[in-house]
Image (cartoon, rainbow over all chains, first blue to last red; front, side, top):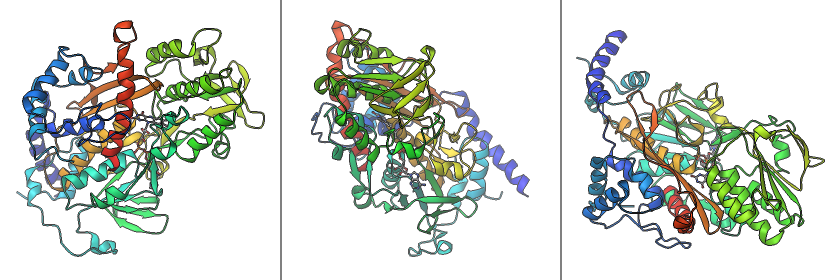
Length: 109
Length: 447
Ligand SMILES: Cc1cc2nc3c(=O)[nH]c(=O)nc-3n(C[C@H](O)[C@H](O)[C@H](O)COP(=O)(O)OP(=O)(O)OC[C@H]3O[C@@H](n4cnc5c(N)ncnc54)[C@H](O)[C@@H]3O)c2cc1C
């Protein structure tokens, strides 16, 4: 009984998992954005030390975000850390991040 | 075909090394809506997550689970009334931050996000009954448990440096009274005194931390006690951001000259400390003995105590996990994040603990709701200050492969550009970003 279970599960499981194993997976955009919040904050944080030095990610148009991120990725724009971060993602992932951030319902505190 | 029940499926998916739920899970019976009860038997049908440790990992996970699904009840167990960040604690001695600025309350987690905060300590985990038992004798049922207890120390590995001795000679590697004591000792030290910092072997919490500490102490001594000296007696031959630190020390603290305020003695030059004599304020390193005025031994580390007693650790002293979900590879339904976990290439940093917690939070929500676990990725960014106006950083993006192994993305990340005239301005920018980072990460964790 128990064994049949596992067999059924493993068949289903393999069928599900195999195709993913072969392709490079597309990182979930919401998770990428959550990681951005570590520096940028989930909303405009008021820092008494360096107000606004790290820009807030709120209320930016998708076109601006995608342009900035690809410019950082290909070193067309000079930054300190963003060039190093943007290189970690594919263009597709960066564009998904831009769409996520620009959607007003997603990017809330 | 019989439909898998959740527990059986997850048990299987765990052993398969990847926890992706099948749509079949959605057919599971509805959760009961009975009122809250202290009685664990009654509570069993409810969707409960318990989190051990209200530090970086635990507090972040609590907030992000509640943000993703407010129907899940989250109880965060933490003995301390407020949390004192380790990050920023090196800055206090340099006058960049006051101690109170390191403290964060749990009020927002409770009031804004509806996290139940329990000021208590977990003494036991019962994985079969899925209960945690606390010091005050509470029994709490969990559907999933997240463990983020931070670190514990290998006392007496440096012979004579015991927990008891640490109350007089602070490691200051868990912030709070330890930090205050170290600062008091530095303030009380005479001009011309010697400070010893003894960083541990790898792996340990905050790889650049001891060297940032040396920098911040040097900044303070340079202004107030300029004839003093810092000796770093290292158990290793290299360290995080070494080139950048050494360059900064050359520029600001005369590193490498006769008047060097900081001297670094690696293991290869017999710098490793073997023994400590608290009565004579003397350390015994491989090169011989050295007396000092302030001695800051940072002992070798392992996962927080509860992870050991619960059987979550392996022979390394840290906790192996499946990285898509951070579920323990030893005990199902129990997830381990933060410094206590074995996190592939991710360092034991606050940024990493925060990043791991968010991935874990969404995975826990998905598993509890029978949804597919999403494809994770992580970031680590660690800023260090060489002076209040001179910052350096290391960063990396991490992803996971089909074998559940975390890898650093090729071509991404790395350290700040090294210092030549053209980019000297970046050091100032990075110092400003470092301070801004503190505000934003603590807001993301606690507020
Ligand atoms: C000097 C210094 C500087 C640092 N600087 C930086 C930096 O600039 N950037 C950076 O990213 N990181 C930095 N770090 C590292 C960072 O502080 C840690 O990596 C981070 O705190 C790890 O989070 P955690 O959740 O694993 O553990 P912690 O934050 O330590 O939280 C663990 C919590 O669990 C609680 N706990 C333990 N056992 C139990 C139990 N049985 N029951 C209930 N609660 C329990 C503890 O009380 C504690 O509050 C620094 C560290 C130090 C020491």
